[in-house]
Image (cartoon, rainbow, N blue to C red; front, side, top):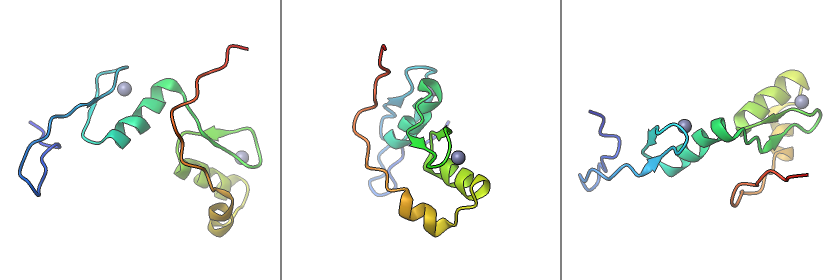
Length: 94
Ligand SMILES: [Zn+2]
Ligand SMILES: [Zn+2]
């Protein structure tokens, strides 16, 4: 049995409440679940500065920009100032 929810400071095993509503996969951290859910929603908030590609993770976009557009890491960091996201955008019905 996995004790991912074990709090090492308190010794308390916390309830794992971060469950994916799409596949039931459980996560010990809310941020891990949020990142995972993107797989199902297809949410790709990180758009490339040069082409139409979009990525669900900043690291992926960085990888893409460095490889495909020959950006340096410094250039990427300067450009990639993504604002912290609030609630996820809903797809418009247009
Ligand atoms: Zn899932
Ligand atoms: Zn690109």
